[in-house]
Image (cartoon, rainbow, N blue to C red; front, side, top):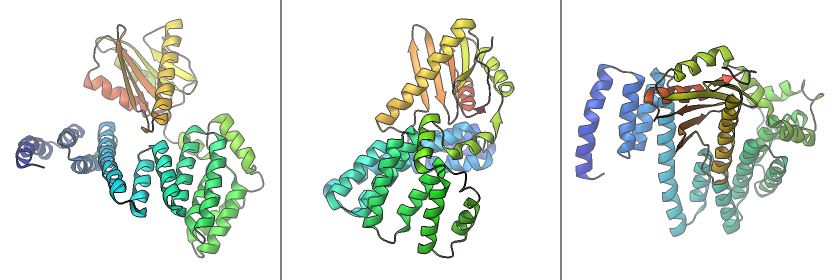
Length: 362
């Protein structure tokens, strides 16, 4: 950072730091972290946001700032690594680049990077990275062809990396997530031969003994995942901290009380809660929100951009803000730009796991 920028940075950060000391709150932490982001100090921004999350773990804004600053820091490091590959390609650079791309959700770019690495060197670690990327693609898209290709790549990595536990652990993870427990138990047995005395592996090996008999074959498990779009480990996650329609409805009503707001929507799977529009209009609104979420996720995935968390549309109809979470999505339709307060409610609502079975609410 230049001398002038350091001076400007200090003058802007000082009052924000004083405000944080005088009145620590999610807002004061977010303001300081956001200023670090504006100054390009991503590591400091993430540190402040993480400190704030330690005190206010429910703050969605701080969580988003931490994720954003980490993503921007990773993007900067990615550009540096590409430059290093151009000047002096070597295994350590390939490995770090593939890891960063995978961690940031840029699966397509990670797979391309691993393919280039393997073509250039024939390294077993590159083949393992290709297997990891294809597994992540399967976990995202739930297509069994991706799982089969991932297993072929893992087979190749095992041959190139004999007595290396990492390919086996990746295989075990895939088997466990699709519910092929008998196959997972066999892999754990192989891992115990490589790593005898591992108490966690031994405990898992014993616990899977009771699940082997009703366990589907690998092909059956992959067909079921492709048909339902669900991995077996998601059922347990979904049951934790579920929010019912009675929890969501008051939030939607409160958002609709804001000036200019014409509708608020919460969708999850095939069900939806709509506040504002009625009848056929409510159904069309929910359908439109669901389509925006699905198409933005698909586009982001194909472009290797990671997960689409927020989409804003503007036109003659006004403003449509859509926020997507792990299990559901929320949207606000307004004739004017949403206020910061309402925007925050939309973000928080998207983080809920809804259990509603109602199609709409007048």
